[in-house]
Image (cartoon, rainbow over all chains, first blue to last red; front, side, top):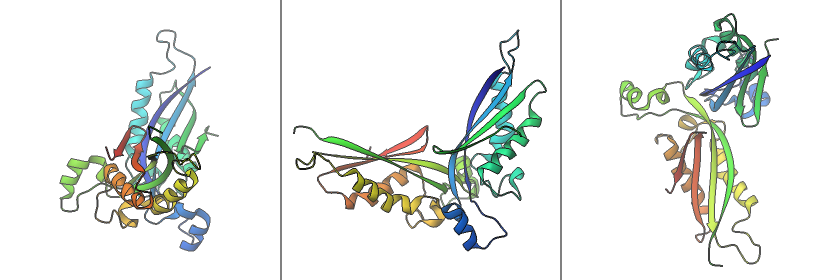
Length: 136
Length: 137
């Protein structure tokens, strides 16, 4: 089994809050991340697929085609956007990177060709914080 | 000692912003600033590198105590900008377009008064890993 990763990036605003809580409760739990006027990040997205190289091309899947799919299904929806306000698959979800990475998986998985197995999505929020999701 | 020594301190802040000229129409802002003018803001992990140059103090061997420099940057810059919306939450960008260029100039102007005149100051600000500015150039 060979694992191929394509890395993309997007710059976005968000805030963390539970809409059922008071502002004080949100600030107590989420701290600065609850700022009502948003803050932002340069996110780095790594999409890893797995498979056996095709004997004719040597590819699991053409990485350029994978990039186009990621850009169309995910990056174009997220880049230079407000994750809480502008993203259809994050409506009614708390805007943590944990929820964002599962939302991205659910956007991508159905868009990949049948022969491509999605293995892992890694989402880096800052140089010190990232999440990984394996679809479980 | 014949030559100055440059010392560098790296800090970071995560902030939202958008780029727009308030005297322009939405269409003009979109034309000039593209996605950066989208109305609901976007954001960046800004990486700040503060360069201070001078002759090391013979008594300490320091150009500047890096703990003092770090505390100064935290107090004057990070506490103002981290996890904020630059357009909405800061006095400095209430009317000034928060481009990387203008942010670097503002950071310089905030730090300069707190540093000895014998020290030179330069700001490098990364807006993304691929775009960064320096001031003074």
